[in-house]
Image (cartoon, rainbow, N blue to C red; front, side):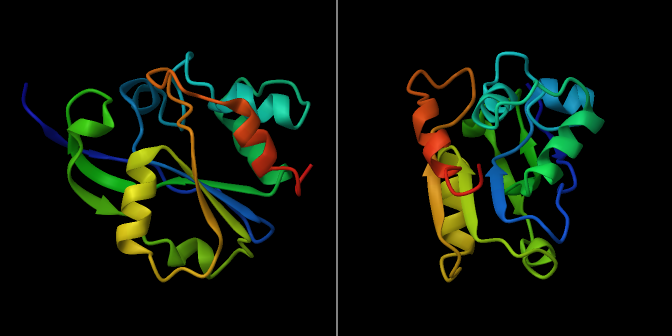
Length: 159
């Protein structure tokens, strides 16, 4: 299969954002709908809705409003790469997000890294970051070790 350069999505945040969630790179399903965590089996949106005891946002606008209402910024560590399918393991030649865009405009107090690739890239490119950051269990349906309790605990101070 031929690898093609794919582009990620712009970040979702505003000046009130306090928690930054960084994924790796959008899946094929996410790229089809042009927004984060588009695969119906991904646990991301369901987990956040349950943590905050809200209805699951169904469309892109509802998801953006949910994030901003809950002071959550969302982006991916990889903004451009070559990739086959959706697997993080197939990401090649990643262009990493310039997080100063968010750091300069929002008061981020905590960074949650959704999965191994985002965590690895963050440590490689942002090891001097003074904001506390945490490797979270990936919400991907491919992760059999997902634990919602870890996500819930990460938001204790925002609920």
